[in-house]
Structure formats: C-alpha cells, structure tokens
Length: 71
Image (cartoon, rainbow, N blue to C red; front, side, top):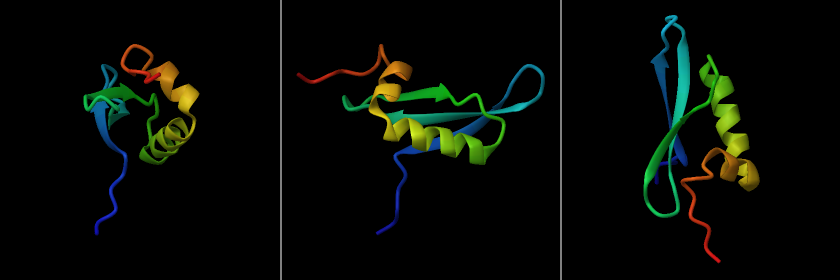
C-alpha cells in the first residue's frame, strides 16, 4: 500500500516573483481547503504543515471558519 500524506503542497509565484508554498487538506466534513504556509522553501512548508496538523488548536485557528466541531 502506498503511503499517502494528509495534505498536498504546491507553489505559486507572488507579485514579486518569489515562490510561496500553499497546502491543501480535506476537512472532516469532506470539503477541501487551501491556505498559504508563508514559506519560501518546500522543506520549511512541510515542517510547518506537519506541526500544524499535530496541534489541533493551532489547526482550528487557521481554519476557524471552515472547521465543523462535533459535540
């Protein structure tokens, strides 16, 4: 079985021509959301997203309007 990450990374050139990395994840309700990491290197972006996914409270802050909290 192939290992699959919980997110995908992609880069976009900003107005100044610098590469900025974004990540895309699936939320618990099945919708897909994308946000910027604010990082210029893939390694830093991967580290940022891994730390973000490990800390649920930080993830909620990033996607506060997108997350549906089950009670």
